[in-house]
Image (tube, helix red, strand yellow):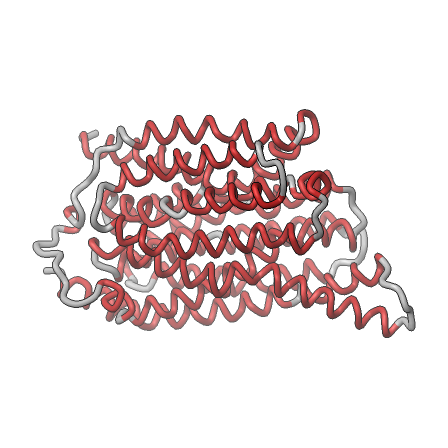
Length: 433
């Protein structure tokens, strides 16, 4: 094994750990939402606003950090970002009221905005195109494992030692990983693809937005993350209301079906995407498109299960998650295929800005509004004058059917990307020679 290969493996291991903590620290507030709400005397709107503000700040700060990624040492940027969000995560455990808690979560969002652009840019320069999707899959394994750990570990710590302790515990691994990030040797930009010139005329943002495939990928990101954030917020309440499960049982099902099974899709999608990329330039986008096309009927059938049909629901939602998570390893590496090496941080930050601001930040809000609307309709249909638990269950059940519809639309946008990616890959190659 060469020195370059050892550095690549070490870097990918550290980046995986950082991404795991990224999603663990992001989801921990959701896992501990109820005890936080009770202590600070919040309503559900205030609790939901924490996630919305976090997402909007994350998206806004990500754009300048993406440009910084393309012009500065990425390892140093990651180390600073991880240190910052880890300290602010611990500070969340010291919050004395709602405002102070909200401010600490904003700080976590600012720090975490450094992770994705710099991490993905590093992977693009550490691994050749034919192995990039598998490397991206390993990096993105931090997402399902981070969600799984947040649901399981934070809940356990919170129940036995209080919700504040969970935030303190989350700080130390981040600080260790920040130190390890500084040991990664910064690879030269674009050297692995043997470009002779990386200079491109005009605004870097305009250069990225001229790529047709990026527009399709951004559209897919809006739809995909609208769904992801809506499901992450409302699946556990759905299991509690409709299937009448307890909080712990509902969270365990969510941990497995929304977190753990996603690892299968990430690895399988990365492997298959790399295999097809050898013979088809659009192989990666086709894998993602067909995966979402198959995931939609799984969700629809899961929602068709009667009360008490929890086992079938779990299997179907887990299958849907496994298929959906192929999106991350294939689409994220497809961005590297069409964007010049010195613009990849910019491209990822623009993609994240659009998908978070227009998709993820409103997913849970709109899903909640639909749930309230359908619950009110159910109450009127029954001739009742008070909102009862059965109406809330029926309302959320009806609202959840928007998820498979948006999955089909996301699949369509990825098929659109598969039609333009070959020309954009060729243009990127000719422009950077």
